[in-house]
Image 1: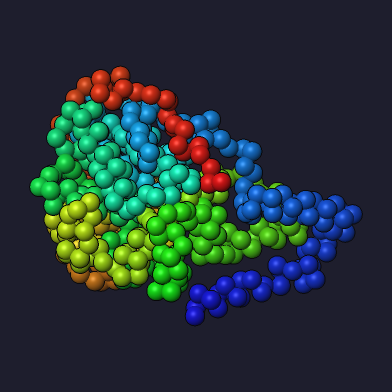
Image 2: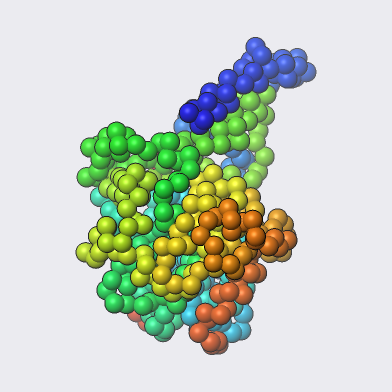
Amino acid sequence: MRFMARQFIDAAAPTNFLATNPEFVQRAVDTQGESIKQGIQNLLADLEKGRISMTDESAFEVGRNLAVTPGAVVFENELMQLIQYAPLTAAVAKRPLVIVPPCINKYYILDLKPENSFVRYAVEQGNTVFLVSWRNPQVEQGHLQWDDYIERGALTALRVAGEIARVDQVNALGFCVGGTILSSALAVSRARGEQVVASLTLLTTLLDFSQAGELSCFVDETSVAARENTIGKGGLLSGRELSAVFSALRANDLIWQYVVGNYLMGGKPTAFDLLYWNSDSTNLPGPFAVWYLRNMYLENNLRVAGKLTMCGESVDLGRVDMPAFILATREDHIVPWQSSFLGKRLLGGETTFVLGASGHIAGVINPATKNKRSYWSNEADVADANEWLASASETKGSWWPRWSAWLARHAGGEVKARVKLGNKKHPPGEAAPGRFVREKAN
């Protein structure tokens, strides 16, 4: 009810309408009607695109000024490309870092411009970084399931990275739903008696979905059953629909300000890399999407040991017992930080929980060089999230150096950086960022 009331109030604001926005009238007079003409042209252009323009899209191009950290694709299958990044230090950690980003958006949120690239930062800290670039599914990939993302995605990436680095264990990082996929993959791996990961980092990740935030307003038995009947055995959940859902969570910021600025005032949005990424939507395979919605958001099955079977294995997050670093962000509207905190109790190993300032994206992409915002930490073994925060210590600046120092403890030693990427079995192919990340959600 609160969510729907806010949607109505945001939509009904007088500034959204010609007759009740005095700035519209004044601008039309000042420009002799040119703003009205330009606003209509902006509206027609957006109708043709099927979405609201949030940024000057001509200012950015993946591979030109976004996702430019040097590297190469060293493996690919139907589902993903695995990118290995070139070293930037003479010596590197023996264990590489394997990053599993969300498949609901494209990976380059972690590799925007060099000055705010998390990937580049990790490489600069002496890590050999591998990253999964998920395919933007088209009709041909509409059959892919949750198990495919586990087996052919995360587990394959961990295996290939280990083979290239010639190590038995790697360090792994998952972001958002990428963290849910990675944690599930590690539960499968542990059920098989394997221990392929030495440390686990989870960024704004849900493992316990009992407090799933406002996204849960879109998920109930009726809606999930309808999806199962339409795309559960094949098809796509379109990127346009996913984008509309996420925009609705912050309608004033991601919808109405552009309705006013672009259409009523006849303006053009400014260039902003994060909003370019936000507009670069991705599809999801239907079987994957409906399994995720039912078993995570609707029934919250992952938190129950043995409730789910993945890749033929009964999974238990309690067996994911390597040291874990968990980051949540205080103003996250997609993964409420208290929900992320609940995941701390599900994992079987020692956990370090850090709470960053800001939201789901800005709280994660907080470059150390800019030293903005702050984060909270607390080593006390406290079960309640609010009690944890009440006695937590605030540290000014980015959480990145804190994480980097933690990761260094799991490096497994140091080796000379190898300039040549890949190996004989997995030779380097096309240069990063690869072609999968350039695919559009048509």
